[in-house]
Length: 208
Image (cartoon, rainbow, N blue to C red):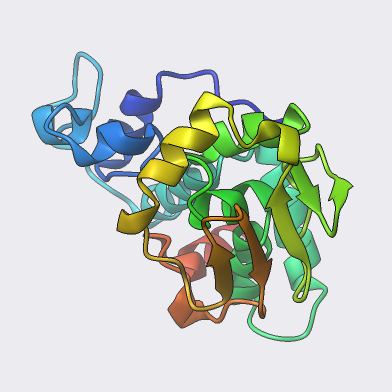
């Protein structure tokens, strides 16, 4: 399973934007981006000359960190996107958006994508009534995602259930918070994807 080992608050500061990597903390006054709105490091406050390549690279890094995937995984997603008909950047985001860990997070069953990955890898999640322990599993339209019956009382799931009323579920998903289950209705369109990224910059970077 892909695992980001850096301090996640520093990752957000590096991208100068909230990537919502620490759940509820990101919405509080303790958020590092709010307290320290500059990149980490000794030369953090120096003005940098941002070239086109640098801007494209930062966009790729931000997207990787937002979805919690590593370099090799991300490259594989891009290669798959180039082989499909349609807009490469949009297809890339659709693949990332329909990862099981991201779907669990968007449904409100976990406070962060990292927590969603942990729930999945520990066997707490089922897809069409079958246990799936692979966070990168690609969820397809019509598939039903549920929290395993024996797992409904564990602390992370209970905490997620308590905050369910504040969750805005994307239109391409439907969720039953009481039963802790949901379904993918359709593949998300670009307008449905709220990731703060410019996918065209990533395509331009890889096209060089």
